[in-house]
Amino acid sequence: MTPLLEVQDLSVTFPMRRGICRAVRNISFSLGRERLGIVGESGSGKSVTGRAILRLIRKPGQIRARAVRLEGMDLLTLSERQMRRIRGHRISMIMQDPTYSLNPVMRVGDQISEAYRLHTRSSRAGARKKTLAMLERVLIRDPERVYRAYPHELSGGMGQRVMIAMMLIPDPQILIADEPTSALDVTVQKEVLELMDTLVRERGMGLIFISHDLNVVSAFCDRVLIMYNGRVVEVCRADRLHRATHPYTVGLLNSMPKLTQPVDELAVPERDDAWDSEAEDIGRRDEEAIP
Image 1 (cartoon, rainbow, N blue to C red):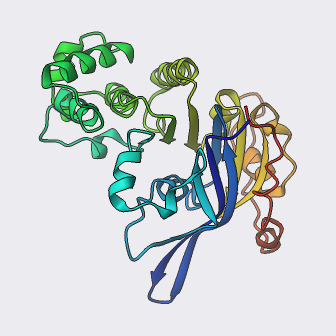
Image 2: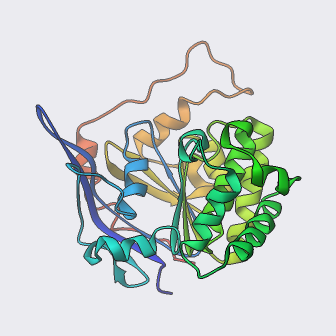
């Protein structure tokens, strides 16, 4: 089956005073109608990869790739005006912290309605009705009150649900979720993950789930890309993540605290310059079947 998204040899660089920062280096992967996790430590290139797919890297940052195809259409060849029709409508992205993603001086309902009307010809009344229905769909108990609220009046969990509603209301084909549960407590985290899982399965979407939490990814996703220093060093099924073989992945797993196996000191993942050369074409060996 043709994948929804194909990324081939994607690189992202940023000029610095002392040379070039290579944030993402020649990574390749495909996304079907599945939940694809991207994990790695801070600075490994996870978030930059998500932004690069939507061409949200501002100059002087540069994106280079053989291709970034959405159902066969190369996004790198589109004009900025054409990309604005893709963003939100066909590919949506949930940023890390709703506190900084929502406009603080606009009511929540107006922001969600704006996202809907931008890609449809809906009237204000129609957009309001759709927004209230979407707020209810993401399990907000009093959608009328939240519609009229400002972002600072929402809790972290409610703000994250508002972001999910805003990104899903245009009915995209792909959702990129950048650490959507990192600021939430365990109970709310579980509710948000179940909500995303239900919506993605019902709509037959593709999901890119960016996270640093290996336990969450292994339980929630179908496949996982492990990133190190801007490269993909390993690709595996999510339910086999804890049997990964690459030394970096093993190091990440060993550095996580375990209630059943207390230790005096957590292990620190080792690093090896040779991993850069080993990772050159791992992304191209995306051998798992695309759902």
